[in-house]
Image 1 (cartoon, rainbow, N blue to C red):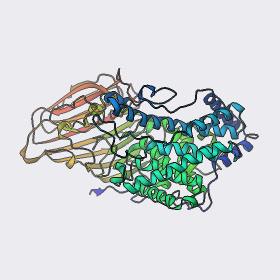
Image 2: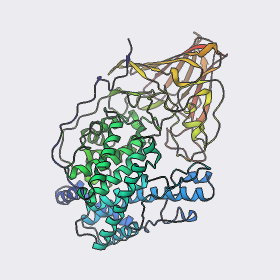
Image 3: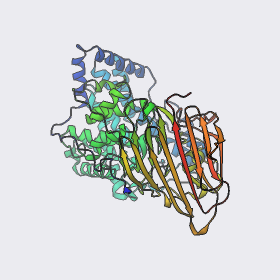
Image 4: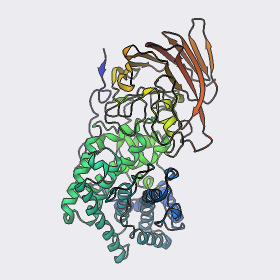
Length: 637
């Protein structure tokens, strides 16, 4: 008997950690502990030396300066968004300048706290000089986010009154607030401190006005999930905290209200519905604001169930062999790329799950500032997160046989009506066997990739159904819908029959995923040695069409396709075998398709390829069933 997808495998959210009463220490206080610990710990001394050396390298670089004309974007360590390739004239300039603000403020959020930490740890005068010079430059960047970030589509014009505060707002405020939190009180000249406070004071009424006038699209649509809601909210909360929340009480409470709205919008089991890449960006913004509030005695956000459980959800992305679950716009393909996120979660949330993963899955903290702060954490008993879970809000089931690197792992995607930044991947099945990729998805290249909307985000890039033989168009500007695939936010619930340490038995109910489709039920069963996918397809209204499935493989080698004595189609490649049985005539072929999974994000040219097996009905059909069984061996042989 099938049961609708529970929140987690046990049927209820994981137990919340004990609620704390005390305020977490400011970052400067943690660094003072590190300075004292340095005398007795060689590992801490080494980490301090590494951070000081990184700060000296930053101090030797030129200042990051704001640019004011399109021809200067990319100079002075600014960033040029490659989507400007598709734009012309004034639209190109306003978009490029707005996006360069995101790049420069994001860089400041990393470099300024590093320099401040070095100053607090006793760095030489070059770091102090460089820090003061950069802060004087940044104090002139008002507003922190210039308008134009909505103008990435050709022909779009900036609306009257602009498009509101955005990502650079939160990043810029974070850069200043973290720096002030780290520095000793008298480290900056009085006039510079006043200039920075003036900069932040100008941001507060601007952000408040965005919510009053409903200027940005995310306020008008009441979309508290998106990072575009979260980053300006972080900016508002943290600016008020720096200047004193009592002096800006109404603005502060608006920021807290919007922050709590964002936290409530995600899954209470800790799941984030935009994938790991966006989680790393968005949740760290939520954590930044929540922890800053808590250091001032306001724990309303830091104790929220989503933040308490999010680290478990994040750690469960680590699949055997050091791979990760890379559905949505993940941007991450290897577990070691999660080190910054996991280390910061451990430091900012005192998360046991994140600390366990840092110690057991990614070979310890890095040599950056977050890694240094990590080394000041008090001793805790570390416990591994569960091996399997079924998440309703993120519409996914994930499983692994153990936490060993050479274990076997499976994940299956459904679809939630509130999904965002998702791909046309309802029903996708992924398999890692003995630490080696067997079934994969194409992944996500950078947004400027010319094939992103044809070969990656569409059904073409996933192990899913296609109706008909129409292939995606190679376009970066329009979202194609091959085979009638509907736009995102198509509901595809997952029914769970069994999910335990031995394996699983789940069914994706994907009936709503195509126009002209009456039924598509995908049943996935697996254990540590075999995975079987049974697809049952029926077209609506007596319609007939070719039915096609793709299986993206974790290899770039050509596979061997043959027919066995029982009449089954057998696909062999080193270490694995796929057997396919259909209810009618079946043709199986192979092709090399662009890859952004096996070796990370694909470049603009010279795409890396992986092998894809294409199974399709020989004739146009009204109903069709296909059973695909995958077995594997420990040796790649």
